[in-house]
Image 1: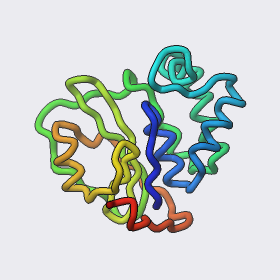
Image 2 (image 1 turned 180 degrees about the horizontal axis):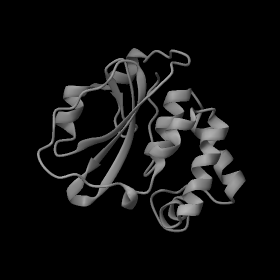
Image 3 (image 1 turned 90 degrees about the vertical axis):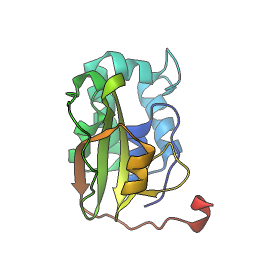
Length: 167
């Protein structure tokens, strides 16, 4: 899997691109062509604002991304709005990853925030970071967060992490 850097509030679609090998720049362009505005996750007025405000628009955007990238249908539910995710209580358990590749959704309960990342063979690929991390190091970095949902997908093509990504 190749690590792809995300822009603000692009975690789900960036993770989908990492899983499928789809070009994120191409996806951004196709989203703008299809919906008439850029993603612009940093402010008001872009497609991201529509994604957050409207369940119907959120669903249309997720369907479009799953369709155009060739992602498995199972990734569709990982793009839910934060307000739709139930927030657990209690002690944060130790994180584990299943074998293979897929996506995990992590949540930070105090701020009711969710984040989606990809994983493969024990490494977590977070579009906010410059290098993949092992699960223990990633949990230490995301202290106080918890894994909400894990999805394993069938292997497609294996992409190798270039050594220069971690320098």
